[in-house]
Amino acid sequence: LDARALAALAANPGCKRRAILDGAGVNKAVLADALGSPSAFGQSQFAFMRGNAFEARVKADGGAELLRLVHEKLDAGAEPPTRARVPKLDAIGPEGRAARTALALREATEAATWTLLDHPMLALDVAGSPAFLEPDAVVVHPDGSWTVVEIKSFPMLDGSADPAKVGAAARQSAVYVLALEEVAAKLDPAPRVRHRVLLVCPKDFSNLPTASAVDVRKQRAVTGRQLARLTRIEDIADTLPEGTCFAPDRPTAELTGAVESVPAAYAPECLAACELAFHCRDHSRASGAVTSLGRSLRAELGDLTTVDEVLAAAHGEAGDPDDPAVAALRRAAELRAEALESAAAPRPEEAPCL
Figure 1: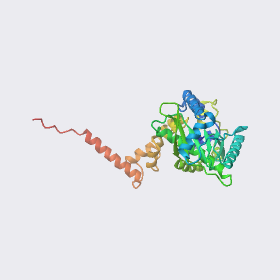
Figure 2 (figure 1 turned 45 degrees about the vertical axis):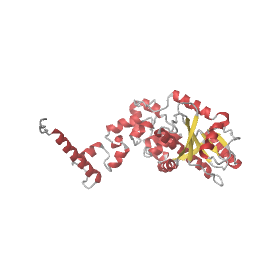
Figure 3 (figure 1 turned 90 degrees about the vertical axis):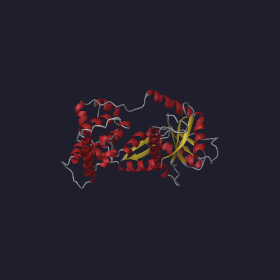
Figure 4 (figure 1 turned 180 degrees about the vertical axis):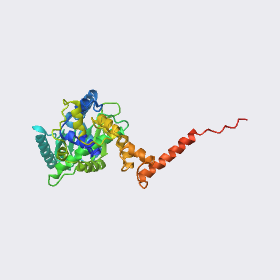
């Protein structure tokens, strides 16, 4: 589980299928190919290389430019970061790196000086399973507070960037903030984890870095609440048939049965966040689930969960007339019938022009 996966889980906490596949470390892209529904989700190799090159530029010279941006955008009242510490975070395994990161954060807080942690490792308990997260950077300020830094390769044009991409980066950063808060809670006194993160992007069409402070308090609250609602992985596994296996080399029919044995909560938003989205969409449409039309519509329809139930309620064949959703559907059906009748009626001849 990484921050992107956790952000996607938090956006759709009712999807037990994604929860157990991510918890088991299943490669969902390979699984989607084996199921016959290849995924178009992912990052191109070119974008990956460009992102790495830009991040290396931002962190060059001991992170001097990165720290300058943090000082300018988030802590202009502090002393300039002319001499910053960049501790080594090498250790064996993710558990070792997480412990080394926690030690480096404590030492940096006590030192009361600018410190840059390059790709630290943070641990976060999610549904009873540990998730190890690796933010681009964490900066410790002279006052002992901590800031998450997220470096992205999409451009910031005239000081603003694509809202959808900024929103995704904010949700991802909120996961890091939650993980940092768990580390801070173990220290006495607990350092302050800033809820304004620094988003660093290329400026306009150049490769020069620029930055913006992004307040993630809302995303942090929503993500924390949704992650707390996630069912424990063990509880989901206990409901599966004995011998369930998600290995891609299994026969297609057996593999499909294994995947379908875990309930999913498909919505169109999954297409931008999950490799199994096309497979889930096909099965959602085949079953007539209204969630395939969007979460907002699903919320408006109350107990009506399938398209057949919605049509039956609209035509007066089923449903409680006192149900507001049923009443609204029947009124909409009446208005539609009136509009079609009016459109089909012959029009009177127009008066000749004089």
